[in-house]
Image 1 (cartoon, rainbow, N blue to C red):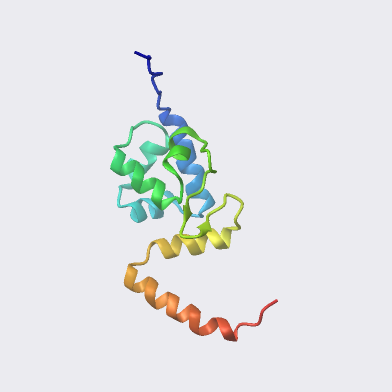
Image 2: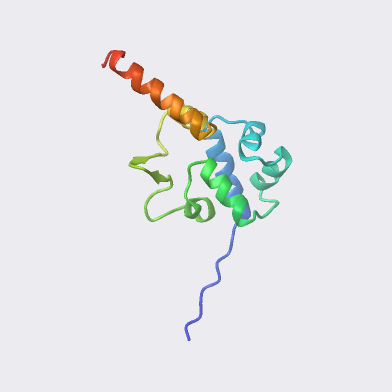
Length: 130
């Protein structure tokens, strides 16, 4: 029988990644707490590495930050640090406006997203292409 290597979870490194990614999105800790449904105090504890998250909390935070769980936990992934969804990739090098737009869209309900999609499809033909 092969011995398995024990995986150590570094809460301080995870917290640092949460803070860095939150700041890349231009969110205050209070805004991020509201966005995730957690308290500002809890987010602060996570960012300082003082608490270990449950799996559902970790999934929620990774989703809100557009990160893979691999990146959030270990700091690297085989396919990159950003999630790849439905033909689009959220890259670490995106400019702040793109991140802000993605953050706003993530806060929308499916009904709101449908309305936004219709509006965009309506105005795109009228926007001057560079």
